[in-house]
Figure 1 (cartoon, rainbow, N blue to C red):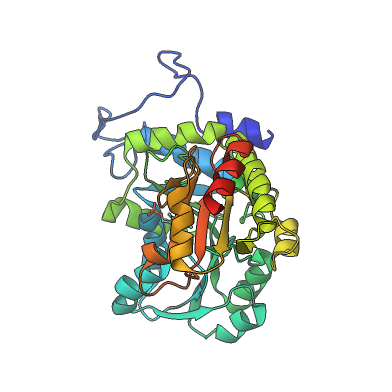
Figure 2: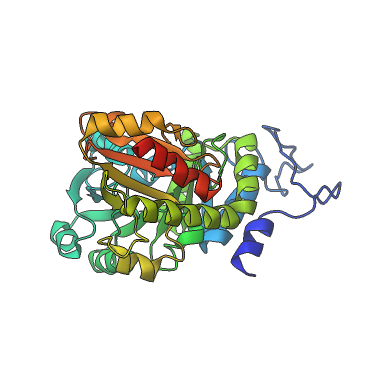
Length: 372
Ligand SMILES: *Cc1c(COP(=O)(O)O)cnc(C)c1O
């Protein structure tokens, strides 16, 4: 089955009892036992497993090309379950360019709990190799990354991980499975903040993990999901499953919009840099072109001057909304340094944009007027 067809049909089908074409939302927290006390229908209690969440998990495993998937209450809950499945004493390698919540999670929760952590430039394979220790068990990749769209060679990191006996997890939130499929490139886990493109309408929070193999490590992650209870709720699962059906077409349109907007910005005199891996001038363009099918709908640019000038541009936008997050129908613009706070690595003049589903000419005109 081709990708678009899979996104529409995976995990669902007409309801066996009623014939309903849209899947039902199962709210029941508890499920009837068989007369002999068994649970042959597969469901006992909704923290362990719920039919709506299961439909989403099955769909995502198929769409990412993995063996199994698990749905969580947020992207951070999903990421957290991966680190928690490691053992105290294990060492992890994080990228220096990454969603700021990931190192915050590791530093605030998992270093006190016993993990050790190194931070490296993930686009420098020699630096990654040099950071490997005997106890390294996980390499965390995010590509394209926050906020400079840094590109990491996934297959290159996988080779290093295999040699070291370390798993490779890829935060695939920005690329989406439409743009990039980390498991096909050898990664062990693909992670998503489904709050973003998978939900796609800025109205649901969620996280997903997809595993290449449903092995002993992923069994531990599943046990953390069920025991610690950071599960995706039935209605949230249903919204994300609904989002998945239109994902390929949304991301295609958002990529078109990113192409139009970044090529406009690249020639604007008030813009000192444009960060988009689809531009031939981007440092990671060649690797991105090799490992991505689409360059995606996220970009950032730097306004000459600095913080006040960037804030001024954002304040004059009428179509772009000033807000954090990404992946929805509405285009968003954000001054990244001020939302990330004092630990930020984002340049003060940088504005991050999430391209929505508006007409590209309206987006270009809006930025043109805002830049003056
Ligand atoms: C938003 C985001 C997360 C965190 O997801 P939440 O749903 O907000 O917990 C993780 N990684 C990336 C790349 C993100 O954009």
